[in-house]
Figure 1 (cartoon, rainbow, N blue to C red):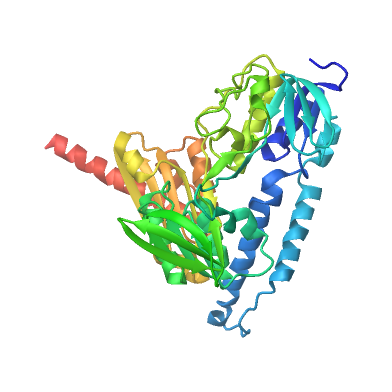
Figure 2 (cartoon, rainbow, N blue to C red):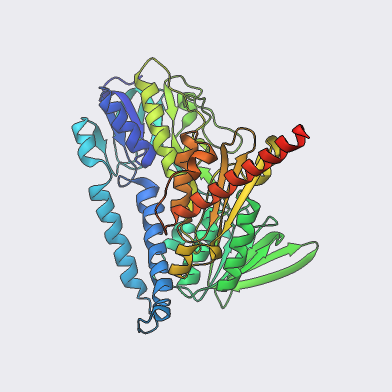
Length: 476
């Protein structure tokens, strides 16, 4: 152990959502804490993730809304996108978020020593880390929060392609784009650039896009994308190689022995996420990774080295900002306090700001039916008042209910304000509300949250009808 370095009770490596909360929590608990960031404070969420992406998605939505103005008697011309100005706005938003919302004042108040833009860190020994720019510190406990990075494809010509990060930083809107990967990241890229006027081809290796979502969500989103002009290719086969072409990049793929190709100005690869652990020298600290390269942790977020914890995307669990925040809190609590705090089953709403939006919380209908006696109640958006008023009739809200317990097992929404609707369902689920209790809340009318209330009322009424029929059958 090297002794002539600054020593801390807790050293946090990485200053994304998990790292920020971990450092703040450790400091609040009285631990002498250091936060080490390779780049600027905020990590992927502020600089390459939700903040810039949501800003671009907002611009896409404004274009969509502008085209609707004539329907309401407001005369305007066709919206024209100044992409350079939009990128300037993205930078402004990122800077404002970094200044106002990234816990700078709180970290200072908690006496956290912040090493920003220190370069990539690595373990020198189990209790010492050093960075590319000369920072060298020791910690009794260390929390790894280095996040993740886009997964690469091991095929010839991959260097010609772009990641989703490259897509967000394009200096101009490309005339055409191929997006390989139809999970949450891929569909977000496809949706945003489709709104900006790019001809988009979306490739899904599986039989449907958004494979982890409820099947009805996948079907509806595919329909919506095709209506907007996105060409969706399901079960496209296997990519053989990429080559430079006059148009930009040509993608060669094979399916069932038949070869085909397609060219576009930009090819974006969005096929998953890997842990950002390269160069950390985890073995020097005795930290194990799993077969996918993610750091192994237990329910207390402790690694195979008892003094090292990990939180956020680097663990490969649910790779979302809210989950990373919770991870950071739990990891820091356990690093400082003797009583262990565990990661329990947390109600986790998930959504994406595509056009249309989609969101979910809890079980899909298929997974719920495998383990429960289920009632599924669906409200179509073209049957509701608020969506009619707003001219947004596409979509649905589906509530999945356990027939016996009358509890809410899941909620799946496609359409306007889908993310907000699911947040309300998540609160009801976290509070263990029955569907009857949710149905009795007098939600304001006409609102999008009211659509959830209507689905709850439909479910509760059907359960009551079924119960009455069962009682009648028993008595006769």
